[in-house]
Length: 262
Image (cartoon, one colour):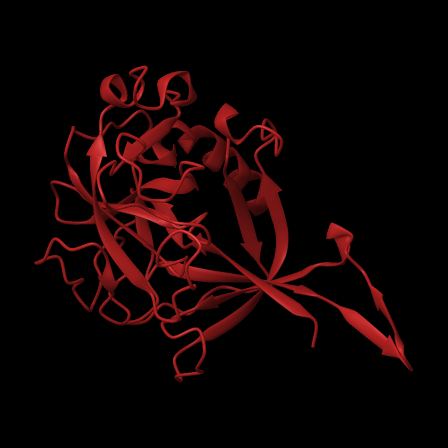
């Protein structure tokens, strides 16, 4: 069977494409709480990425292949409960990964924490699988603008992973605030977005998940990709969750898309 590690990716298209960011099932945005189970399929661009580590057993000895080249990745669309196959899921293998060329896994605070996946076949769009909108290049969030982070990460520091998709309201924190010395200081780059910083945050296992922000046009935009939280704990005052700022990477996303289409 092999071990399985779950991280997250999302389905997103450039905002010029019509029909993005409008879920058939409206997300429950009425309550401000410390996190709650999301209404099933209300974030239809949320995707689970599964990484399989193949193992072979011969008699009593096992050979573990841990080289990254031997990982097999697949995405699961229309996922809600991780522990059950509920019917609408789509399982699609990843054909190719495009990691940002300036990403350095020894320095997450250096930024460029973003990758694109090319799937082996197209997703079937329906009422439970729909694309998000991407922001325009250079778009910014207003301070305290309400956004939602979604994921199957830990429910609290050191706690259990969520079984069902969770959502939490995280107000955006502008760069001038987030980069103050008693906040994230120089770790907060202009290519990042901060959100939260009170009792609510993303947590380990949410990495790669979306920061969903409603635009003035009523559509949902993925403004951030979950990158890191404070080492002292997921819910730390003045240490908001830090996201890759998608609006900084629109040109790179366009280049990769063009390269894969040609």
